[in-house]
Length: 342
Image (cartoon, rainbow, N blue to C red; front, top):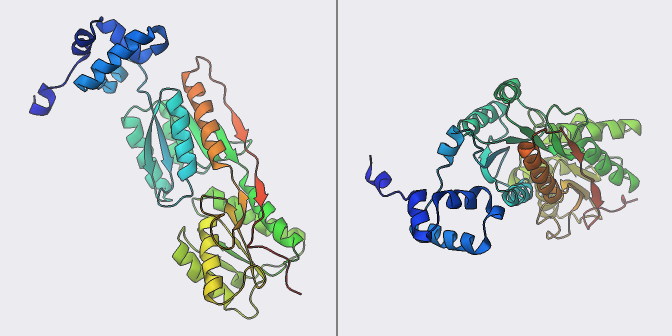
């Protein structure tokens, strides 16, 4: 046994320090509502003084829940998923669960590897962003009979319980806003849609909405950029130096839209008089750029909170019922869109 392990404090030592039985200490952790508040306070003081940590792994070996939920997101590099992660974490914490977070970098094969690692840690459930996943991931969740959840995207046909927004509608709302302002020559800047059903659904909806108005979208009006303000700026500059340039840019998310705004400003264009720009997301900071970014608000905090509440109920229920929750979208009009110049 290592020197680190020798000094570990156990539940008996906590019970002795608090002058209660070990079973009362255990009850304080597992069913605190059944323990007298004064006794709980005394036990918590002993836990803090001794530095006691429960052995969740031992509990799991004996068939108890680990008290952890895994969440695998595409990225933690940008604000895109920050709000939903925080809200989800806060929500499951209220139900007594802790969050284990992993990122796959928009690589669905890597997502599978991340899910395997979380299952090795005996999480009580695993939440994934979006509805598109590798076949191996879906099969693994089914084989292990582990509760699964899809966050961010909604579909009435989702294989997993889901809490999210309709990204087809998000793309349609963004397009209809520009069309209502008279824009017909619209440029698109989107991330890669392969392995990203959020972007794919928005992109498809934009094309379909334009086609319904008999508006052609030439290939030269479509550009690709990752979730990077600087690379989105360069993609926008390429579109905006075409002659004639588009009167509006529709961006797959707010990160790209901010890059497009900086591109327009660097070229001496006035937004929205010379160019309208719309994003999708309404992330933190979207209202703070100058001018404020017009965008389709995806209610990230609401999605995270509802997902945490629904999923913890699902995990702890003796007879869990699958659920699908669609959160409302809203077009937030700020300063980056205006009527097309005549």
